[in-house]
Length: 179
Image (cartoon, rainbow, N blue to C red; front, side, top):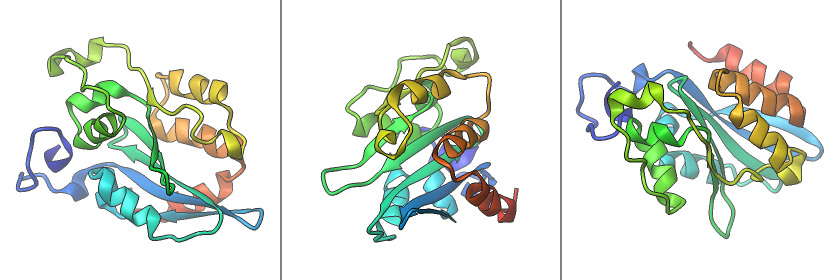
């Protein structure tokens, strides 16, 4: 998969644009939800995703949702005290730099798993399951969503959008993305 895979450099023959998935910024302001697409580099670089979100300068609550290569999702919520993070599948840090970056930011070691055995390992979430609790998605509900490992990341993120009330805003943005 090129630059997004752990251990490979950006000069790989498979460009970042080949990475599937999406990144969106979600803003809750004046009682309304707004969703905006993030750049494609947000799927490969945690710092790029953070910078793009911080550039929103919204007085309301905001966070990012990343569906990385249709394999896992990341939720990031920058704040003055640091970015709160959640990765839906910590095992993906073996294959994807952005997942490894999330674990590093959480001070968690990348799992010692043979990449050829990833399909045999049950995925697990790492990070702040209460990252969206103040907006109406309590930690136990997030735990249920991340435990739904039979679902694709976009379906899990859809559950989050439904629970918080921005399904139509998310769908409108995703419908415009090239996929």
